[in-house]
Structures are given as structure tokens and as C-alpha cells.
Length: 205
Image 1 (cartoon, helix red, strand yellow):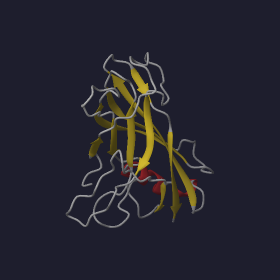
Image 2 (cartoon, one colour):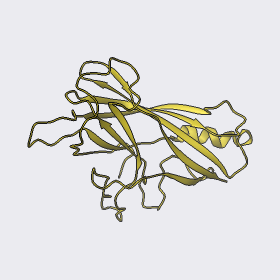
Image 3 (cartoon, rainbow, N blue to C red):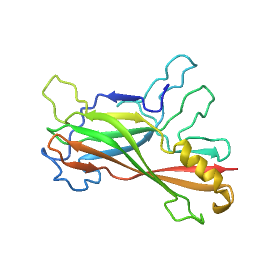
Image 4 (cartoon, one colour):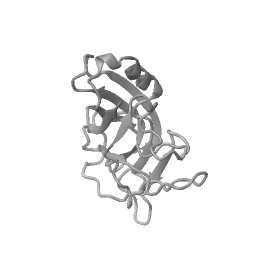
């Protein structure tokens, strides 16, 4: 990927477990609007060739990473030094049978156990602009209810804040838990919140 906001939409013809219609505006918690987890590129290409992005059929998991607090400015970051961010693709699925969902963004909360700061130590909202199609499509049509979106979980401002307050953080190494919940609005105007997903970062000096 060449930018943190790049999005790839993968075809998905999975059977919806939720009925048609909207969620009534309540927290959905992953019943009809699901966060599937965090995923990696299928293959890192040598720049300037584009990386191969996650798809419905091939989406290796990104279960966490190890960073240096003083040398890392964003999460996800450029792990292999090829000039672009690595991993950090959110899998998002709409299971409403007949309505689209317009993804609004990701609510991010950062928890650091043992920090002498109020937890969460930081929060953010990362905007996304993705439309997920309905889960049920006519025979012969391709579903578009699944997307993989790469975005910043922790931006440079928050990383700078953590670096400036290292005396209030546990001694390294320590663990930072990034808790994310995705929000979206369906065609009827009802708001959905996905289930929470947690991304674990081990922090070194």
C-alpha cells in the first residue's frame, strides 16, 4: 500500500446470519455489522511495485507487533523498510440481507496496563469512507459486503504524546492494547457499531 487510507473491497458471498432490515439504531455489536479482525498484505512487493492486498479467500492475520517507542511514529508502521505501512487492514462485513452500510470510521481506545495515566490513555476517531453492499444478491451477481481497509490505528500525534510522557508509562517492555469499534449507517439511517477488536502491541525502548 502507498497510503494509510487505501481500501480494497473483496467479493464476499457469505450467507447473512442477520435478517433483512435495519438494526433499529441500537448497538449491533457484530450481529449484522462485523469487525472480522486485523489482517496483513498477502505478499510484500519490492517498491515501487504495489503490494498484494488481502482478499476474501486469502487474508493472513495481523495479530500484533513489536515497536520501539522512540523510533515508531505510527501504528501500523513500516516494518520492513520498503517505504509503506505493513499490515493493519481491518476486515469489515455487512450481514444485512437487503441494505447497504456506509462505514463512518473507527473508534480507537488505547489502554496501557500499569500506566500512571487514566486508561484509556488516549482515544481517537479515524474516518473511513467505505460502502458495503447487502449480503444477499441475485443469482449471478457478486456480493460486495466485505472490505479490507488499511488505516492508522495510532497516529503521529498520539505517538508523540506517549513519547513526551514516558515517565508516566510502565518501564519497557510493556504492552499497549488498541481497542477498536467500527461505526456505520445503513440505507434507512440507522447507526451500527461493530463488535470490539483488540490489537496488541509490545513496546520496547
